[in-house]
Length: 134
Image (tube, rainbow, N blue to C red):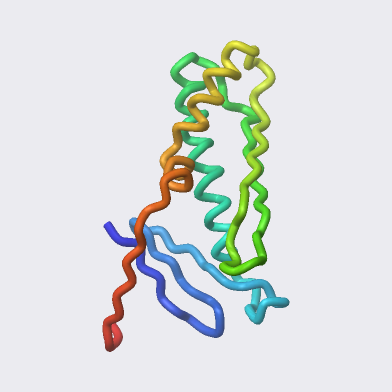
């Protein structure tokens, strides 16, 4: 299934994925109206939520409540050509009931997420143009 992105105005886009609607926009200082998250924030969210899914599944597998689980993703931009994300930092707050042995297993689980693997093994990107609106 494809994710569909439609231009709305200026730098505002509507994103449709599996029946869910999201908004993507640039901050005002970058020419947008700040009506949604910017593209790199979607990237942060993709990495953080993917890690969160793997962690929450692992916790549930061991009957550990995920209450208090929180993932914070920050990134560093490389400004030389090409401008891009140079690194991500992921800080994870685990539930208080998680012991050191479980932390090691959770680190393995967090590192196994599909988004993490995608960054480590970048995919090829093919861009095609079509003329006319759908």
